[in-house]
Image 1 (cartoon, helix red, strand yellow):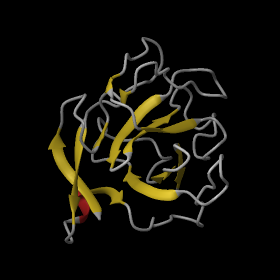
Image 2 (cartoon, one colour; image 1 turned 135 degrees about the horizontal axis):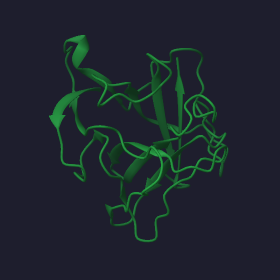
Image 3 (cartoon, helix red, strand yellow; image 1 turned 135 degrees about the vertical axis):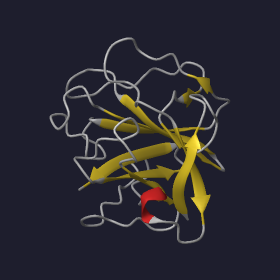
Image 4 (cartoon, one colour; image 1 turned 90 degrees about the vertical axis):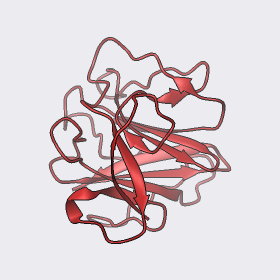
Amino acid sequence: MLLVHGGEAAADAPVLRTGGVPLVPHGFTWPLCRECGGAMQFLAHLPLDIGAVAVFMCQNDPGMCDEWDAFSGGNRALLFTAPLSPAVVPAEGETLLGAVTALSPHAGEPSEELVLGRLGGEPEWWQNDETPACPSCTTPMTFTAQLEEGRDHRTAINFGGGGRGYAFHCGPCGEAAFLWQR
């Protein structure tokens, strides 16, 4: 199912969206980049039947923290199943996108400029298939969503200039992963 531009959304809306503030369980700690130690930028809230995937990526020194790789520490995806509320945003670092964009599922063929990703199904890989194995059970993770960079400079996610992001999850293990390709 394609994800198309659904207009603006509230920063803490419990809908498919890029930007805004992550919805997190009690006791959440904002993810830090393993490379530079800075707070990561929140990219997307992806509600699922089993909870929600929150996607983060380091933007403190773009291109220097291996944020394209699923497990190098420059990005982080988290699967939350508990009751969620807006996170406290760190005061330091590139932590939020410039705007919030609702993502609406669309079954037809919308105009290309409206497409902002894909929900479920199969990813459209830019390069080779890089489906991550779950770090807990080692089975291939389930494809959650594909994200395009965005419509303009305020909503754009930095996937290296024209790249795509890919989110995955393993429901039984409560794990999630994220990577991007260009």
